[in-house]
Image (tube, rainbow, N blue to C red; front, top):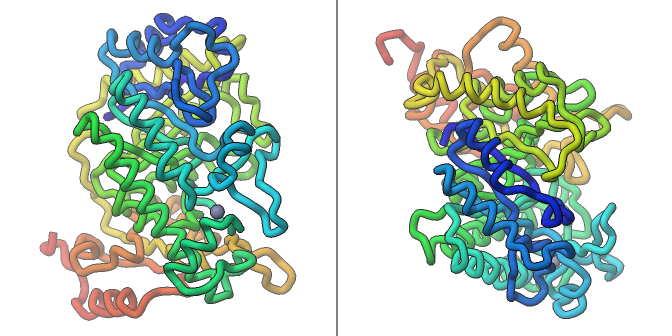
Length: 450
Ligand SMILES: [Zn+2]
């Protein structure tokens, strides 16, 4: 896949959406695949499964099916875009064990859409209900793949206090989950391991489930986080055949190259497997103007950064009835260029001769309260800032470099590099330190080594 697009349906879209026109637009971008909303929180097809809420405006339409047919007519593959992280009250009443709870026993709700309840990945919503939804969609439409929005993510962990969480944690460690995500606590470190194990188990289960009907089908979760990935992306890469980064744009003082940082992190664990990056065609400023086009230069730079760092741009608009359509031409111009030059985006290998250690454990654990921010002399210290500073210096010096994930520190992986630059890497395993010593001992790089 080299180009990808998405129209994200909203609940009212079944009233007005014209699938043929939308798929004409994405065909004009020469995309290989489109993402279309299937179900989970809200079904856009006539589901028969209980507790999967249908769009209130679906009526007799099958918006997912109609749009899938229109896409296939234009030779685009279809990935069903799913939501697994919230469900409606009817599900909560019937299956309270599917959901997350606070320490005081109250269920967690969506902060804006308070009628939605947050599901827990340690419960059977993830092992039974979501697989049932995948099977139903596969039976009816056999899409080319499935993608879950909002899960597993790469942000900080949040401790859930449901019975399933207590049971599974106890089975694996013999104890009770931590009260908080204080990274200085050894209990949190155990919780982190159980948490990562669960993500890997669910990802594999869903991958196996979607392949039951179609052996070529693929499941992909939602990752991202750039260089601030608290969850271990190396671990996630052991189950992922495709890495998607939900890294749609920037706000505040974020530099434009942040998008390419995401590509370098993903490449450091995925090698030549597919890495996509969701590009917001709408304005992602400090106020998210979700129905206004991003400035063309901003959107184009973000797409260019994605492609240059080895990611596939996935161009994304929200809602099928836009008043502002200026984003369309911006996408078309860039995707035209990408298609015209696509041979240069195949069979890639890095020409970089400098490796920069990606210090996953330091970013995950060098802080307090489960975030990367650390109090030092009353100031918030960001555990990724050391890496950020080195990154900026290398860019300004026009050096070519790759990230080397700390869990990939082997003689083989380090062989192409003349130097390994190490930002603050406070936490390395003994085996990783040994690999660095061996690299140093092996002596100075000479160009003939390549
Ligand atoms: Zn739970």
